[in-house]
Image: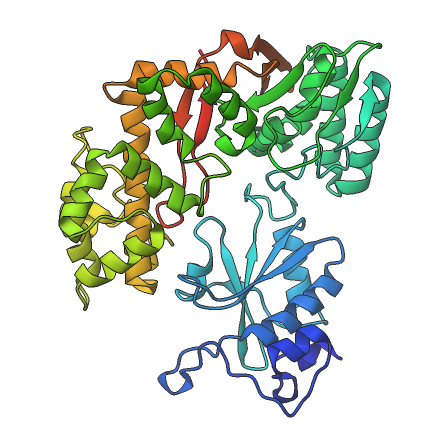
Length: 496
């Protein structure tokens, strides 16, 4: 197949047949959006986008090329690329392979990502959508770093037990193999050497400047390797656990370590199920504590439902003001996301003002907790209700998400409101001291230390360690308002 055949009639085949590798040219696919008579672009459908993705993967052999279909607020299928640079993408699109031109995305294509900048290119009258899912630094030749790309798991160290010298050697080899950007690789190798010397050295000024915009990501992910290295001696071994988001990031004889960077980050209740079970057994005779713990128990892995269902269930169990007011407005109780969608579908209005009407109707629920602001109100809410001074930049969250599917979009916003309301109820309500003590008592059962690592702008590294038993922990919930179940609530260490 020639690259210039992309978008031709003979290649508009059934997606299932394309994926299976059994192309049948007589089967035509229906474009995702094809209002040609109105002068709008003819956007590539799933099959066409998949063909383009295959070709781009050949043109960019070192890149990670994936597909995402049109779902929810994302109106068209698109190609998502990482581990490459804008410059390399432009060369692939503009070069003889595709002989097209990389352009900025139009209003429709821009909706496929609220975080990264989408691009557009056209081949044979078909408009394709592409997203470079790497943070931009302003340098189009820079490949950049994705979250978790420098973690022990993605560098191939998970499951290995390594002494100090082996850890340095294995990390060095992993960087040489996986990091194509020569300046980035050189900076990471210098940081590795610096950590091995206790963190007091500095990066070459040019390298320090080069990674300045990525220092947060490097601290969070590469810090999981640097932190144990800073405390190991020649008799120590470090083991990086296999699995997703374990409570501790590295196992060592002198003390298991949970590594945090920047201001710290939360950890899901999913990682401490065994500690929750142990704590519950210890309070079996304390009725009041059991009632309080029952709210947190809704986030236990054994609790039924998805993350959104668990947020709703915990809010209903606590009977927080936001939940109570919602049931009054919606005319019924609910304990699952599906039930909430059903209730929302019965009260929303239709037409251009539907989003405004919905927010105005639900505003009393957002204000019911009396926290000094309407909790969970989307960033564009005040503007669309007529109380904001200026319109926020159009993003995926808020009105676009709501209008893509009003019953579900509305239920998602309300679930987010409940999550935010519950977080305030636990951390700022009348029982906040009890919950703070409870969270701390649960987590400190783990025989581990928190390693708070800071990589400074000059490349020097500071590591501060504290045992869990000496720390205070708090409840935490954070997620996008249009994807309230993106993160399960959990806990965070209170760092001074």
